[in-house]
Amino acid sequence: MARPFGVYVHYPYCTHRCPYCDFAVTTERPPGAGRYARAVRAELGLRAPAFEGLSLRSVYLGGGTPSLWDADELRDVLAAVRDRFGLPGGAEVTLEVNPESSDPARLEAWRAAGVNRISVGAQSFDPGVLAKLGRRHGPERAEQAIREAAAAIGNVSVDLIYGARRSSVETARRDAERAVEAGAVHVSAYALTLDPDVMAEEVPLARMRREGRLPLPSDEDALAQAAALRAALRRLGLRRYEISNFARPGRESVHNGLYWRHESYLGLGAGAYGCRRGDAGSVRYGNLRDAGAWLATVEAGRLPTAEEDRIDARADRNERLMLALRTRDGAPLAALGPAQTREAADLVRHRLAVRRDGALVLTSRGLDLHSAISERLFE
Ligand code: SF4
Image (cartoon, rainbow, N blue to C red):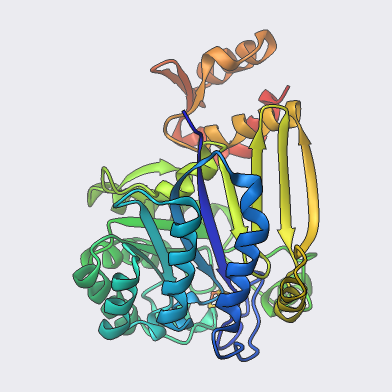
């Protein structure tokens, strides 16, 4: 049977740059007259041959702020993806939206274009946390956007950030509760991470952190916030199925599930990443991050690749193991070699993992140590 894959489309335009963001984004005006959508379709034509023979399961429109994208252009891109690969009826099509660029009319246009899942970038419902994150929306707008999306489309995920300035155990718990009360059936919750060495010039909060001018909650505080958030979601019926992701049963993300199951993904747009898995290893590519350079390259008929890594079979097996350990399904015990099996037994002895249904599954304490545990198990 054909292996599954997903398509990720990156829309890099934002009205302003949030001070913690190191994604491939620009605050330049989007090119008008359908130019970005045409270029995405052109890149699809260039990259599609490498993904022939796979079976498309999901499309994810992320950014940036793809909710700023003209709905007709978005519809044309989805239609082109569907024409090229076919998409089973009901397959997951997710659109990321910012609360300030979502309203009932746009939701209806997105639904008509084929979007059946909305991911709302709420981040928090606490006005102090939102202000320190430099977000433009207030708590009420975020709640309203979730309610409207739940009414129009039904399948709504909410992004939350904890461990930020002004975050506390109380704000983390309330954020989880307010997201679900407003209608979220899925929550992605991440600690604020600011790498002081990466893109520090473009990311003001990372620069402040490097210069010691940004007081953040301690690691212990952030862990306590994460625990409070998890407990609230569990109480409300959302199960943790991956380190940072929670869902009502049956509402787990199909698209992200492909990443965690080590399947291929075709990335399109400025700054997008893609990966073609194969028996002998994988080929991962990253597109030009600069939107103008990406447009010019695609319009000249060339692949807009900025970087390409060939991952050999052993590194690929390690990556597969690391990704599987992020999830509630865990890593198949049968795939472990003798040394890895001994390590696994040690993890079980220390209650960092359990054996369940033929898989090694990290416990809650083990998930907190996921990176270190994965490295211990690497071939
Ligand atoms: S809206 Fe999202 S993608 Fe755009 S700058 Fe803010 S965090 Fe980054």
